Length: 107
Image (cartoon, rainbow, N blue to C red; front, side, top):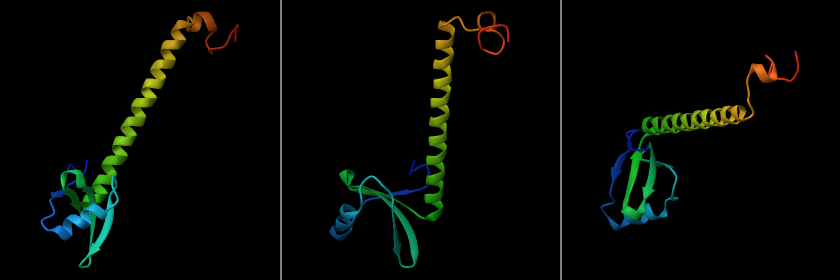
């Protein structure tokens, strides 16, 4: 998602850069200020690299994460309704058995 949001993949070139990479919190994006500019960095020390972007790329990343979360929630909801419909059919669901409002009797 970071690359799709426009983050650039960089590799530290000096020992000092590698040390800074190692000190960043793992598994999350960290904001830093450098020379009056804001940068967002996601470290990948196992591969000796980091994803770096600015505010525009970070906002795009947040939007992608939100879109993905919404898509996942929609899929989970659809699966839940599908499961509920399948269970309903096991009980012989339908207006002929339970009446038009889903309850027993002639309501």
